[in-house]
Amino acid sequence: MNVLSVLRVGLLALATLIGGISMASAADGTISIRIVKAGFVIGGSAGDGVLTFQGRKYPLSVGGLSYGFTFGASETRFHGTVKNIRRPSDVSGVYAQGGAGAAFGKGAQVVVLTNQSGAILELSGEQKGVIVSLDLSGLALSLK
Image (tube, rainbow, N blue to C red; front, top):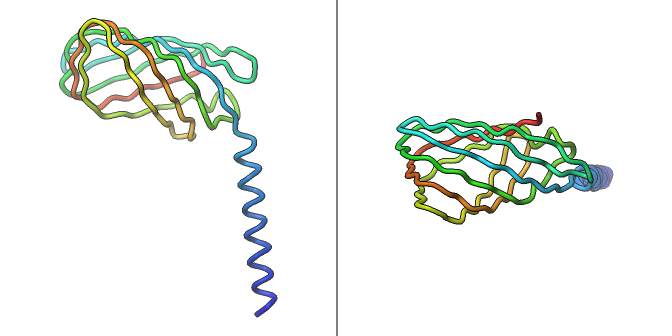
């Protein structure tokens, strides 16, 4: 019985060490993206951006679709951080979001999104244009 307790403690310590190493190797970066969105029921978005990670800049492509009530057009410029990435390609993927919103003229936006790799985008920015939406959206980021 005592051997099992020692074995459990040893396995727990090993799991903690491996988890700590995994989290320690994750890093943060900064990101700037520009998204142009337009639609009437079905909407689309496109744009570009730059990821700065470990002192290097990586160009990004932005695309996406939305379905639901969408009417109008807008341009949003986001700046923020990318957390929990180990390499630049971890930022690539689909960031899903459902929601409602409206912008008339200028408006501030703040959003936190996560992709399938665990990358976390914390973005803030300004939206210009006239758009009203109640939709399900998907935003896809990829390295150019």
